[in-house]
Image (cartoon, rainbow, N blue to C red; front, side, top):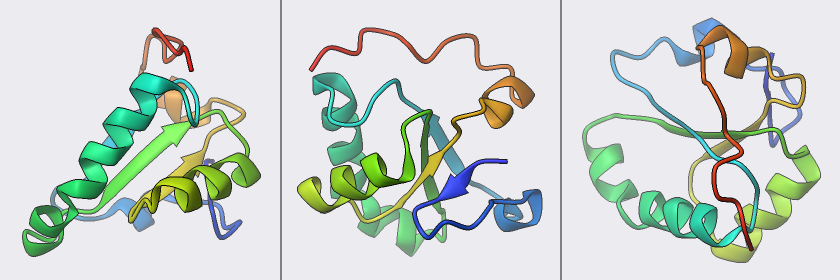
Length: 101
């Protein structure tokens, strides 16, 4: 299962909210991925107000996620899915997109 920045495996029960935003992105610190993450960061007040947790998922390492979160003051959970378990389980076709950074 994916691992959070705290190093804990994320289980289905951790996502037992009526609504969750789970977005997949190719690479920490890539231009488009950074813009997307910063948009979620900037809108977090609305998500929190509506009790909607946000999770960003990529295959990058926990250490990479920590640096990415710190660099851009990201205020939501980033999950490392290095084994692509969640990616496969949810049928995500590709997260390689146009990751250039």
